[in-house]
Length: 130
Image (tube, rainbow, N blue to C red; front, side):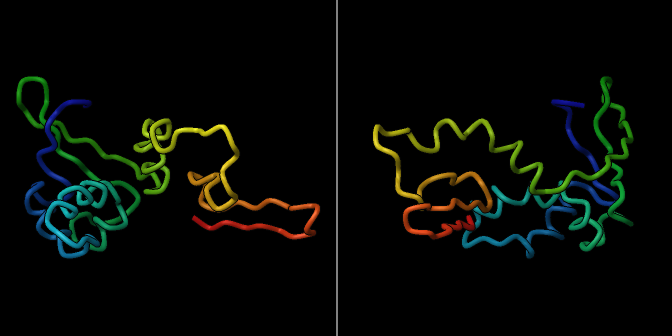
């Protein structure tokens, strides 16, 4: 299915689904909406809440087949956070260049959602929530 055009998501055309979910995309301008909307179109819980799919256990996608005929595929959900980690993983190496000196604690482990470190000399636990 890689590289093929999605024709329908659940009971709606791609354009209909986009229009229905567009108001729920958190963004401050049109470009950000266009950037983030595809993630919403892949989230079964959002598709169900938006009336595009009947449930969140799987979503039926109609995808253009090899000769242009539609192929129906039921896709089981992957947690959005799992997908986003997979999607952005290739960018990790460009996020920040490592410097010679260790960065301050608040600049460490920025790709981890949360982490902590015990600072023995200060008898303090440092906790970060990113």
